[in-house]
Structures are given as structure tokens and as C-alpha cells.
Image 1 (cartoon, rainbow, N blue to C red):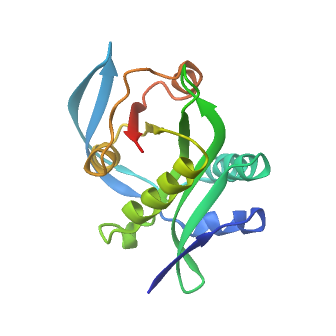
Image 2 (tube, rainbow, N blue to C red):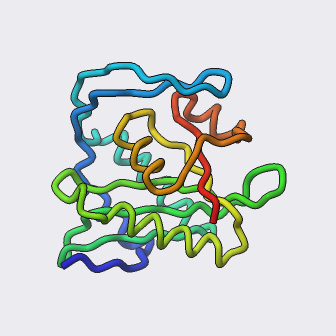
Image 3 (cartoon, rainbow, N blue to C red):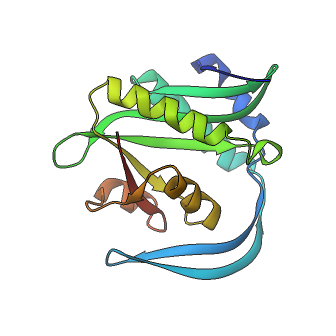
Length: 175
């Protein structure tokens, strides 16, 4: 049985329990506000040490500055997690970002990601946000997940996030 709970800074090492690997059949590209689909056909490996270190640093940065993380636990094992960033974004400062969101390979398609996303959305709304801002990886599985959960292509692209990850598909979800 999956239990959802807030995560702490001390649990940063739990992130290594996530197996982000997957076969990527489709990727999306965004140019001038238009999203196009392209066949991919390759494996995405689990995190290497450099990537894992970066993920942990982002996780800790958000938690230290007022963001929060929600984890999905199968007993003591982390099955998935999501991080709500602390900074309001957008021209109207009414958007909070989903900074990280992962569900382990063996736990996908069980509603865990949707449950985490809904909990983060409720937290964002409680903090006064009107939208979630999602800078999604360009994979078909990630973009489809967010679309299934009510997100759409963002009308206003956050320049700072775009410069950090220019291949990402920028989306919003109304709260």
C-alpha cells in the first residue's frame, strides 16, 4: 500500500531509490509555440552520479527556501516524489512550478504520479497560486502524463526556466 507524506531535507538520499529509466518512443519539440512529435526509439538510463547529485541539490534548495516535496512510499522505499518550488512565476506572479516529478519504473501506471501532482496542486492553491507551471521533459510519456492530468501548453513561457532546459515542453495547469 502506497503512503503519501511530506519529505524532509534529511531524506535527500532516498531520491537514489527512484529508477527513472524508460524506453522513449516519442519526443516532442516546441518551436514558436507549436509542439511537434518526433519518433525517438531509444532507452533512457537511470541517473548517473552527476545527475543524481544535481537532482538532490535542486531538491534541497527548494526545501531550504520554502518549497516542499511529497513522496509516495511503499513501506520504507520511495516509489515516487514531486517537488513544488517556492518562487512565484509569471507576469502576474500567480504560478508555482513543479520542479521535480518522478515515479520509479516499477510503480508507473498505478496513479501514483497523478496523486502526487494533485497533492502538489492543492498545496500550490493553498499558497495562492492560480496555476502550476510545468517545465516537462520532452518525452512522450511525460508530456502525455501532464496532459492527461489537465495541463496544456503554456501561453507565457518562463524565460529563466526555458534557458535552463530549452528542450522542455512548458505547460500550465489551472488550479
